[in-house]
Length: 152
Image (cartoon, rainbow, N blue to C red; front, side, top):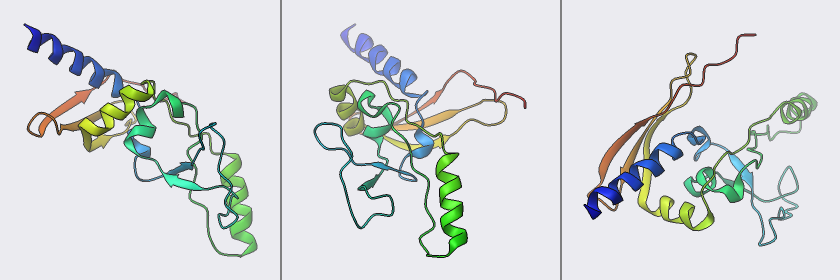
């Protein structure tokens, strides 16, 4: 009975996690924060602050909820690149949406890996394939409710 209850808790956690934005995982950056949740300055960065790749803990953690997910800036000195960087930054509204507590997020990131994530399709379908490293690398597919894109 205890095993079944623990399994239900684990599956409920995975169901909740399925709504988070895994499509930013390892592909986009966020600003690295210090212990006061302030951006760390870095004079060598194009934006003036230290950037790090989005990892699993960032995606699921409430600590990073609503933090901006950065676009990849063009690194050359051409005026066209500078202008495109400016407009891309102004039109970028991507943010993380995790809701797990700090400890829950740390435990989740230690336990699970993302093997595949299908971001929202046009119909709003999304699914994620998790691997449970604690349970003999068991694979768990989670399909969440749909979020259809609004017609323009």
